[in-house]
Every structure is written in structure tokens, then in C-alpha cells.
Image (tube, rainbow, N blue to C red; front, side):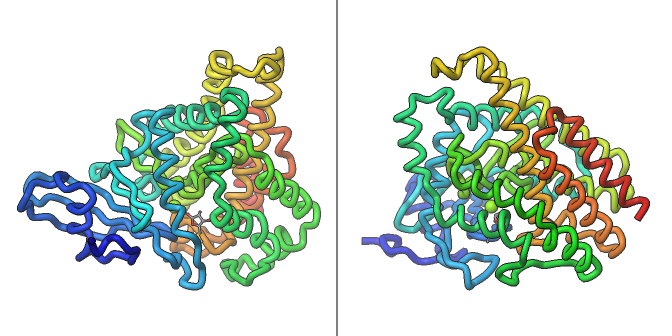
Length: 406
Ligand code: SR1
Ligand code: MG
């Protein structure tokens, strides 16, 4: 019997003993270790344990029964199993781009994984206006490999359906259905956070725009019903670690079978948030990099997708001439929509992004929020017309130009 045979939420003082219990030889006997809770997300607790002498380290991520962002929100701690299992799978499809899972424990709802202490969380690195030349290449390899390989185009269909079943993730999907596809358009649960100077703007542009509501309703039902690929499900820059020569994608607890454009669009939108922050600081070179990288993400995804599709699509009908291009076209339209919904929900919803909320100058923050919303509406309303990376950045630049006149 061990005190870890029954779930409880660990504190820093419990974690070294827990590591010894799960992986007895991870640290040398008698090693002096330090533990720190370093979680920065809205949901979980993340502990880093370091051997003070050798520097060897490990991460323990534990799911709490209440969410960190709100004690009133309770969701199943099973999300920790989903996250561990998808990381094991993604390590096969995208080796070197995700953390190694050493162990996962369905009793304590915790996983023990590789530490990236020499990396920086991408959102914070971008807020320091650092640039990452490898990023577009790495993130598109990750997305093409994890997304295309889990579709019906590549997988045997019964095996794919078994994956759909094992990654059914109703509670975390419900969070997205509410926070991304519902509340930004009506504040149905009174949880939106709107910058006071933008209250009238948000009312007119989001709460009263019926044509927008119709398009977002279509997107919500596509998100819930289009089991296209095994998504990361929350692919923002707070789910990515970077250093100049490497990228690691983690935190896929929102994983489920959905439309690929949701992941790709999230990446593009978060580069636009980085632009917002760089622009408020007057850093033109950084802003240029952010937009260039956003365009590269779309274009490299398309190029790598078509190359891999030609090699891997096994379904006879999926190999029909013209189908790959048709399929990719729908994915890029979904990317435009995913980018638009992320831009809106992070600007007015309950889970916002520090790139924007940290803009201290009120007028600049108000301007950034309006740019995001205007660009987002263009992306959502005209999603079928977005084809290339330049189409995405041109939409963003149109919104910027419009804000400089009003
Ligand atoms: C209640 S959780 C709020 C947000 O945090 C996560 O990272 C997801 O983005 C979710 O929407
Ligand atoms: Mg997260």
C-alpha cells in the first residue's frame, strides 16, 4: 500500500516521493532534489523536480478536479490519460517534436514526462519579441504528420474509428463548444471579458451580427461532427516550447477527432496575437516576422500535406485525381474559420491571451482588439476564398489599415 494508491491533489512537498514511487531509479539514491510548481495554464498543476547536483530533471503534470481558471468548473481528470496516450501516439508520427512520456498514472491522474528546462514557452518568448526561424518548418511537420496520418485517407477505416472512440473527449470539447463557438457571440453565461472602451464595438460587431452568428453556428456543428483527424485541440503558443534550434509541442489534453483547420487556424491566430504585442511596442521587424511566419505556416502546410498525401493516401477513392486538392481546399477554408474564431474568443471570451492583455497603453490595446475582431470576421465570413498564406496576412493587413483610419 502507498499513499499514492488513492487520488489526491499533490503539493510540492509530495512530488519527490511520488517520483521515487513511480520511477524508483530516476534520481540516484540520496539525491537532493528541488520541486517547483510551474503550471501556467488554466487547468492543471505542473511540477518540475530537479536533482540539485546533476541538474537532471522531470516534469509531473497532474489534473485537478477543479480547474485553475475557475473553481466552479469541474471536469473529469481522465483528460490526463487522453493527453498521455496522444503524446505516446504523436511521438511515433512526429518524433522529436513532442515530450517523451515516461509513465502515466490513472489513479493519481498524473503523467511523468521529459522536461524542457532549456526551452521557453513560446508565448513569453514572442512577448519578448524573439523570432524563431525554424518554427514554421517544425510546426507544419508536426501538423501534417499528426493530422494527415490519423485521417481516413491514410488509416484503415476500422482502426481510425477505434481511435475516434478512444479519444472521445466530451467534457473538454464542451469547453471549446462554449468558449469558442457560443459565448463570444452572446455572452450567454456572463463570462465574457470585454475591454470597457470596446463594449459598443463588441455589441455591434459580435452580439448583434446575425449573419456572423449563422456562419459560426455552421462552424460549431462542423467542429462537433466532422471527425476528420486527431487534433491537438488547443494549439496556441502557450502549448509550445521553443529554443532557436528546436520546437516541442505539448499539452494536447483537448485532443479529439475534429476538423484539421481548427489546429492550423489556432497557430496562425496566435502569430497574429504576437503581432499585436509587437505592434504596441513599435517593433516593426518583429511584426514583419510574425506575419511572414503566419503565411509560411499555411503555405508549408499545404506543400507538405500534398507531398505526404501522394505517398500515403491508401483509400482507393481518396487517390482519385483532384481529390487531394479538393480536400486541402476545405482544410484551408476551415483554417481561416479556426483562425477567426480563435481571434475572437481570445479577445472577448473568458480565456484571453497575455500578448494582448499585457498591452499597457489602453488606446493600443483597444486598437489591437478591434483589428483582431475585424480580421476574424473577414476570415469567417469569406473562409472559402482563403487559399494561400498571403491571403491570410492580407486580411490581417486590411484590418490594420482600416483601424488606422477609424
Ligand atoms: C476553462 S479552460 C479555458 C481555456 O484554457 C485552455 O487552454 C483552452 O484554450 C480553454 O479554452
Ligand atoms: Mg493548455
